[in-house]
Image 1: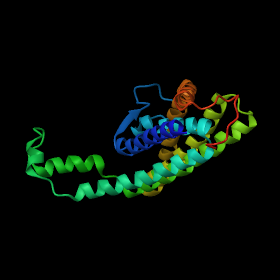
Image 2: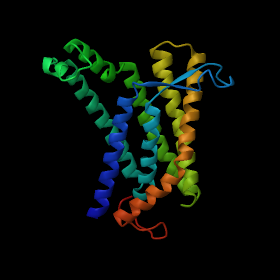
Image 3: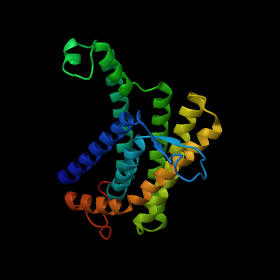
Image 4: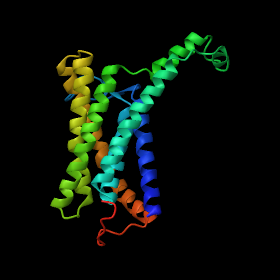
Length: 243
């Protein structure tokens, strides 16, 4: 039992770290589907958030825990990640208002004053309130939907076809996440025209789906390694102590 709990703790820690890093990395925007490519669906360059690189990993970890430990543990991980993300945001706000020291600026040759390095610091860690609200709302809703759908497909397939429930649950929940976060932040928050918001939603979702499909071998690897290190039974052996 101790070994099983230890492995679950590692998975939860990894989940929280990746989730927090998603919020931090999300302030960087990168160019996807640039104008140099043949014009098709989008007709223009589309800008996406760097958080798209790490965020799909949270769904991978959720599905691994769903498969091995069950729905209750997966829900616990999602709620814990939500709470820890809020805690990190509070701590970041405290750090932002602390007065900078001249030693801080002097130790970095790229900045000439405390004001300059403080501005750079704020540019990375300051997040618009509407973005926080949108991203955290989308995260919580999408992850809980992902868990519910994963177990729905697990019942339908009678525990077979892990690739199907992994991709079916993730693609649907990622669609919900993409629509919610971009609608709240871009549409209602920044007032961007809805036709532009729609293009960003489509581009973001395509990117997420491609990553979801690409992570299919990793869900099998993750489940295998988790069962191995936790010394949990294989699917052929029935056990309910952690579910």
